[in-house]
Amino acid sequence: MARKKMMRFEENLERYNVLQSEDESYKNLKGNWNKIHFPSPQPIVLELACGYGEYSVGLGKVYPNKNFVGVDVKGDRLWRGSTEALNNDSLNVAFLRAEIQQLDTFFEEDEVSEIWVVHPDPRPRKRDIKRRLTNSRFLDMYKKILKKGGTVHIKTDDDPLYDYTIEELSKYKIKNLLLTRDLHNSPLHPQHHDIRTRYENRAQKQGLKINYLRFEFE
Image (cartoon, rainbow, N blue to C red):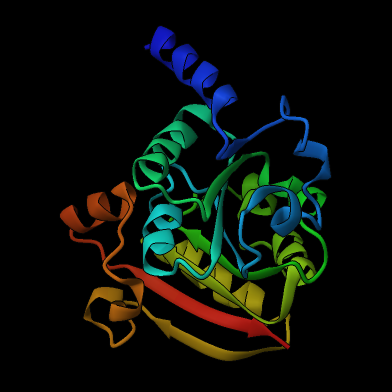
């Protein structure tokens, strides 16, 4: 297994659609995604803690008029999403290997049009609250890099994290809030184009319902 991971890390180094610290452009991406990476200047959409990149790849197929960046620190997982994007000739899909807390190092203010946080680690322990991707430290960052009117999407099968997220959002002025505790039986479901991560499939097999909300910062 370790050997396979190393092979994937090496392949990532050669791939145009995986951006990491070894690349010359890595430190110059902020404010320049549509100049130095994507062939077409289009709205930028992020999938945070993207894992295997199911949403980045899936939405990239549905919306060729948008550019998608999956962000995660685990290179072997990014390799999977990268492979599928390459197999689909999806030039509008890229993957950034970086910590989410460094997001504003790679994206300028008002550079991003949408953010997807899909089945993140719920971080249930109290000592890990600040590591939850819907904690205010992250929400502040999302607000900073989003364009005015930019949308945040959050999906989770973890009810406590969903409740926590709603509580955190009460600290902000937001608009156009839509939410459901049962996405797959909601009118909002078709807007997801039936794109599912492996975590979502696992949750459904366990009989868990999928929580979803989306909003815009005022």
